[in-house]
Image (cartoon, rainbow, N blue to C red; front, side):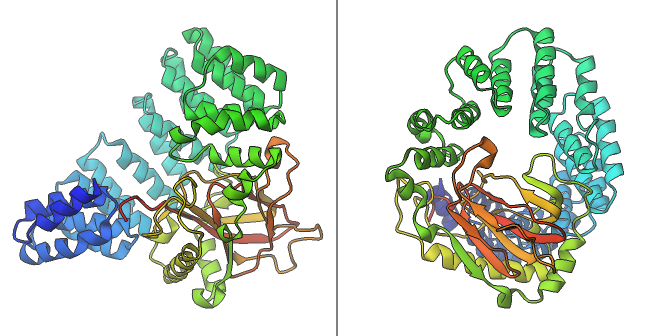
Length: 505
C-alpha cells in the first residue's frame, strides 16, 4: 500500500488538482503526511481556489499535530466550500484540538450534517472544554432520547457523567434505552461494559441476569459473567464459567481468561495459553500478561522480552522545556473535570481531554519539541531490530504520538498498574510535585515498572523511579506501570504514547 501510494504521488502533477488530491489521500492513509505537503502546496500555488487541496493540506498538518497550520488550511477550505459538511467538521475539530473555543464551529457543522454522530460528539467535547459540562450532558441525553440505539453517544455520555461525579446515574441513558428496546443485544453489552469499566461487578452480574431474561442464554453473557467472577477473585466459580463458555477465540476474551489464570497464580498455564496466540495479536494486548507469566515461571525468556535496560530511559530535560511553573499554570487551566475518567487508571485526580500535544499554547509546544528530541535519542540507543520482539521489530521512524494528556493527582492519588495497548513507548513527565515532598513512606509517589498488584501477584517492580520536576521517563507501552500513593498535595504530570512506526520506512 505504501509503495503504491508513493508511486501515485510521484506521478501526480501540480497542474492536475484531482490527481494530487487523490494521491495525497492515499499517502495520508499510508501514514506519510510529511511527504504529502510539498506536492499539495505546489498544487495550491497553481489552484489557490480548490477547496479539496486546502482540505488535504489541513489533514496533513493535523496528522503532524501542527494545529495552527491545519486551522489555516481548513479555514481557507471552508471559505471556498461553505456548504461542505466534512470541511466544516474538520475545521471545528482541529480548532478544538488547538485549545480554542469551537462550539460555534461545531454548531455550524451540525447544521450542515444534522445526522452525523461524530459531529455531535465533537460538540459535546467542545462544550466540555469551555466549562459547560452540564450543557454537554443535556445535549447528548436529549439526542439519545430520539436515537436510543446510538452506542457511541451512550459511551460518551456515561463518561461525562462519571467525570462530573455522578456515580449513580452515569449509565442512565442505557437503562432508559433498554426499557424501550429490551431485546437489543448491543445495548445490553454496552451497559455491562460500562459497569465493568466502573468496577461495579455485582451490578454487571445483575445486568447479565436481566439480559438473559430478555434474550435468553448466550456465550457472550457466559464469558462476561466469567470475567466478573474472575475480577472478584472467585477462582473456582470463574474456572467453572470459563470452561462452560467453551473455546476462546476473540482476543478480548483471551485477555479476560489470562487475567484469571494469573490471578489464580497459575503462570505456567497462562504462558501456555498466550504463546500460541501471539501471531493473532497484532496490537500486543496479550504481551504484558505473557511477560508476567514468564517472570513468574523463570527462565531466560522474560529477560529477552523486557530485561534489556535500554528499553527504559530516564531523562532530565527541564533545561529544554522552559519555565516549569508556566507550564504547570497552563496545564492546571485544562483540568476542568471534577473527577477521574471512567475508563482510565488514575485514582484521586483528573485527566485532560483531547490530544495535549495538538494544542497551540507556547508552553505545550516547547514541551512537545523537547519530548520529540528526547524520544528520538531514546529510540536511537535501542537494541538492534528483532523481528520476533514486540518492541524491537518496528522501524525506528517517524516519531509520532498516538495520544498525549496531563494528569493531576491530589492527596493520596495514584495510578493502578496498567499498560497502553495503543502505544509503542509510553511516558511520564513530571511538571510539579508537592513542595513538602511526597510523604514519609518509602517510594511514595514513585513510578513502578513491572508490578501487577491488581491481580494479587507478589512480583517486585523491575524498576522504581523517583519523580522529579523536569524528569521524563520512557518505557515500553506493553510494560506494566503504575504509581505509589503519596501523602498530600499535587502531583502534576504529562504523559504520552509514541505511536508504533509503520512498516513503510
